[in-house]
Length: 532
Image 1: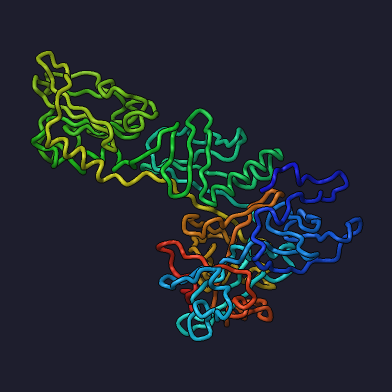
Image 2: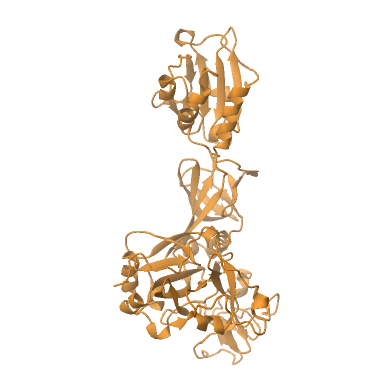
């Protein structure tokens, strides 16, 4: 996106002219899609065009781009400059775009005339319905398994949207509800911890529109980068600096995380108790949430392990399970300790402590471990870890999944966007809830939240690269598609007179084919709810 100052509104309310040359870095061989636009308003120069793709209403001079970098004035016509993305069906060999445009090519790889469609028209590059009195830019008919389908395709302009970021780490990121910042501006907050992962809630309408202009701009830029799988650096009040990117390891205070913990301290005891039996007398698994002590734990009791007289700092929950043994931090097991013996308060000879007692202390990822033997004064002394014990420690690491960031986009599509699908918007909402409509974002499956409205959630790693854009209102632009049977589309009052065949879309040009992300199901399928 261009520098924010370049597109500020004038005092008279008219948008200023965009200042970026269409030819700068643009592929001039791509044929733009020419769009309809209303008559020029008064006070606008005759050679300008007004873009109505969003509420900014840019007045664009010849050869210039609008504020979003997506629409421009090409030879006096408003043009969408990004190509429409067609997602290829898995197993289809793609033709390179330049080869596909060669003379004599008949489009056979993507032609649906002879059977099932081999590509899916996604919302990426499609254009918007704004100002929402008009049908979606693409309403496409196709076939799958002999069923006539319709896919309504658009790029939605979303102020009501956010990202939920799951970060696989035990490192302390910050207190719950702490403000998360980007470039100094508040753009979200810390949410809950869920068994080896911590969650952040980022973006949302209040940060986009409820604060200062700078906060809204920074939040929008952060959200677009996050959706496009780019790394984003975040600062958490009272906590860490963390770099997150979809499907990449988090970087916490400059250190890239490697492992997600195998479980809490108690779970680790339960998993590996039998493998430790006979090789150790005591195991303490250090964990910020539940620290486990083998001899006291039910798993140790089941194995008839002798008491060791160990007394561990913290609040005892149930036998062998301790809360609050230390403060949260970036040390052992997500605590603030680097010296594991600091959580052991004492050894009681009356309750089993004895010279020669063998003690293993280990973290929930196996990255930290130490072996001790009690001397004649019942003081634990460091010693060389036996090979049999080391194998179990290594197995803890083997059972840890890679530490990753998962970025889920959440958006409310229950507003005027529905008018691009049907003249009776509530019919679309009801059809989605009745499973008559498949909703996708860039061809990727979404989870539709229960309750009112159409609130969707999608893994951005399953969407085509660079699916997200923005407009300077500020708001996020993202693809969304609604696929249903043709007869169901007619029944819900859809814009049937605007349906185009897939072949017609292909013949119009201005598109490119992209591979679906691995594991993404083919979006052109008959909805589970069946026909009427």
